[in-house]
Amino acid sequence: MATADSQALNTLGMRSLQNGQYSEARDYLEKAVAADSGNPLLWFHLALTCRAQADAGGEAAALERALAIDPYFYLALLQKGTLFERQGKPRQAAKAYHNFLSCLPPPAQQPPALKPAIERARRVIATNNAQLEAFIRASLPKPSATGTGSESGSGSVRFDHCLEILFGRRRVFTPAPTWMHFPHLPAVEFYDRAQFGWLGAFEAATADIRQELVNLLTSHPSGVEPYVDYPDGSPLNQWKDLNKSRKWGAYYLVRSGSPETENLARCPRTAELLAAAPLADVPGQAPTAFFSLLEPRTRIPAHTGVTNTRLVCHVPLIVPPGCGFRVGAETREWKTGEAWVFDDTIEHEAWNDSDAPRAILIIDTWNPFLTEQERELVRAATVATTEFNRE
Image (cartoon, rainbow, N blue to C red):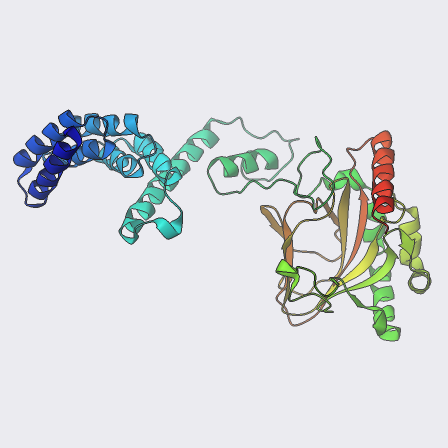
């Protein structure tokens, strides 16, 4: 009977509240919670009534009772945020709103009438985060003259990224290889260029490499192959538009550890540089080196690579305006002759929004955090996997 009584009292109380009869509504709802004190909705309705009466203490107490029963009651969390705002407590309001947003149902299940409240909560949180960031930055030691990083900010790029993550402006990406994940390796989007000093030889020879590519495309254009080449019947997912298409073309110099002898002979300077570089070497699998050609108005969708035991190097050769590249949370523009190294098991994508083709040299190298013993173990495991799957 208690539940039936409480439901009847709740109905009477909400009807009185809607009619502006606040004292009567509160009387009904106090009797309702007395009859069924374990129902968080009744406490929430009592809080609404206390709010209508400008009784902040009663409102807060009723909300706490509702949330003690159901800590994920997002409407109570929302009202708690608005109560803190009315009380001039922006820090507490931001925390309550954060909890409110964390407990929301999926977007498709959210009532449309809730949208303004969600936007309000995000604005309050953003304002609070901006104030907190300014307070933190004002408390930091001044960057040293020998420090590394951006001229503005803390003087440490990594710490600036830490703050961006802390305040929700930077998403955290983790390696997601499609095959082999080697644990305890750093999850670095773009590696420190200083770790790969040998790339300087490629950068210095950019003009020669580019000319060899142009000669290839002029004299033997049929050598360009679709980089994405799944057999019929394969689940294509994001590769549907690029499968078997030369919109993203590859001119191979080394393919899965096997030299493309004729192509290398046509590019003697590039071949010389590849022969001297400490590339990943796994029989039947690595290295791979090729000219990557991206046609105008073409996008390579977000994807991840095979293994974090090797990293991917880009040497930009022909880069019209409107080309870009994203790895994880960091987006960069290629600059002709300036190489970089990245972990392709972190989600990445590329685009050419220009009216001209884009061309880069792509090669792979060992992850520098692997020991020689670990490299040998990776080689053996990879060769064994290939052998196991051969039939």
